[in-house]
Amino acid sequence: MPVIKCAVYVRKSTEHGLEQEFNSLLNQEESCKAYIASQAFNNWEYVRTYTDAAISGGTMDRPALKQMLEDISKGLINTVVVYKVDRLSRSILDFHNMMKYFDKYNCNFVSITQAFDTSTSMGKLTLNMLLSFAQFEREVASERVRDKIRASKAKGLWMGGNPPLGYDIKDKKLVVNEMEAQQVKQLFEKYLELQSVKRLVQYAEAQGIYSKKWISKKGNQKGGNKISLMGMHRLLRDMTYIGQIAHKKANTFAKGEQDAIISKDLFNQVQQALKNNSNNKTESHRSPNLLSGKLFNSQGERFINQVKTNKNHTKIHYYAQKGLFIPAAPVDEVVSNTISEFLNADLSHLPPDSASALKSVNWAALSGIKKRDFIQAIVDKAIFSNNQLIIYLDISPNSVRPFITDVYVNQSSSPMEFITNEYTVTINVPVVFRRYANTKFSKAKSSLLTITENNNLIVKAFATAWRYREMYEECGDVDTVARKVGSTPRTIYKYLDIAYMNPKRVNQILDGTIICTYKNLLNDSKQYSL
Picture 1: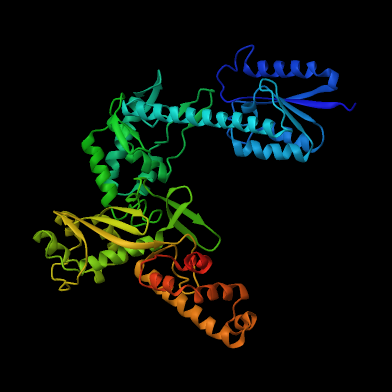
Picture 2 (picture 1 turned 90 degrees about the horizontal axis):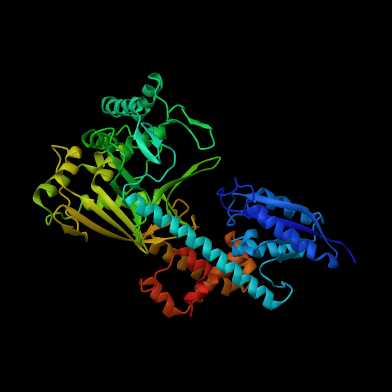
């Protein structure tokens, strides 16, 4: 009878309890070894133990697990023994992938406290049920932690992390460090004088003001470095210094237990300067997007900037949720065109002082930077949802006045639909979102189009399809048509699907009853033919 070479795999998610003489890992290992010994009559033989301490079962990035999988591929192990299924993984997808890997190298899997046989369908069902509960337990635990953090911050409790400059940690609370507190106050006051974050970073280095230096629980020294540009931005916006605790994901604030270092008046002056200083704008180069911090999805989640740099160019996107990246350029273009149209519209229904101020803005004469500043001044927020971009404007005279040209009056009074309520204007812009950039007809466009732009592409697609249909019916050969137009047979077939579409569907698409993008029409034309 061949020898069954057995490996024991043990894991624990946290460091808690590992300092004990007999901990959870040792308990798992001894139990698994005892089980292997009980199977000596089947020629089972213990080889070694693989241990991952303080590592979650929700990830595959575990050193001992990787080593074990490598040894399995080399034929050094025939059977993996664990105390419970969730010790190997708490992710259903990861577990299934590992089972396929085990089968590939003829390696068995045994859980000593959960009897099942993976060679039978019932055993596989039992295994999947156990794993589903393991994953459920992990997700519920994560939810409990998030709920606790949210509730604790709502009560003003500091929830740990790196201490900010100006505070020390004592008894899990923030306590003012007087010397560092003076440095923080000095930086806030100096910013109002310099009006530049970049120059403030240089000033801090010259004055010997560095990031917070502290000792971690493991005794390692952290921080004490030069304050970076983004680090200075975070410092100047940190509400901890006025005695507040922020929950960034929920966008809420509560009175904290810590003492304030600076006054609310000084903090508010710095925030206003950061907002209005045209030389700042997150240093004007790092965040040029018109809607930075002001764009939300329909669930109320704020879009953040995502920058992707390739060899030849940099792409900036708005990002709010997994799988949804909206290129910033087309969004900003839609907003800019909408503002231009609004300034040329009939504003007689607005409050007279706002209407007068808006008609005194010479949009065509403004520089690119001034146009950006004007848009960022009057756009309060924007909401992106299916097929629409809702823009909320603050048209109070104070927001408009810095951009007025005294001798200019805009005489245009074009019709435009919008909703007004005192000094707030709401504009609904119908748009079409495309997940794939670049089309044959509009290579400069990206993933967001106005309805008019999208309709133009649809009309061009139908025109091209009908032209290809005429050529195909003359020669009866797709390859010949492809050669004539310099395309591929596959592309010609796609256009022919459009050309032979049900006429009723064609009319519904062209009159706007059915809204689709050019990309969908080209790749999924059969779904519109029903």
